[in-house]
Image (cartoon, rainbow, N blue to C red; front, side):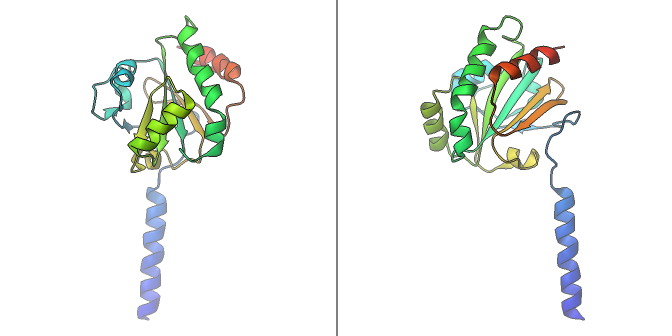
Length: 181
């Protein structure tokens, strides 16, 4: 009887944990009150328009659209697509309709400061790469596999998601133009 009671208690606690787990962001859903880690570099803080050295709310970002690319520092696909992300970011900077209206950042799930610095250098990343060493943001996003791209508007409404390699930065730029308010 005691074993049966213990088994039931374990089952209930597992079901409760699953019920509390965050769902992956989906189109039409919301990022909620998402908090992001502090940028490591002052230039990244300046680009994002947030104070240096402090975590910040998604709602603090001053852009019409926000692109978050969730990466893993040991994810081979993330490394393979680095040139495409760099190209996408440069295109955002050159495009008069998107520059200043679209914010782009990467979130390095589980990465240490040294790992992010190495990825930033290896990828020649010109965009912010935020360190999520304790996986807290990753968990709030439903623990997506990497790479996982999220496009959201300023209110946090999810407009588009993509799991896997971004094959065509040009096609994604078209999506950005279509989704601008």
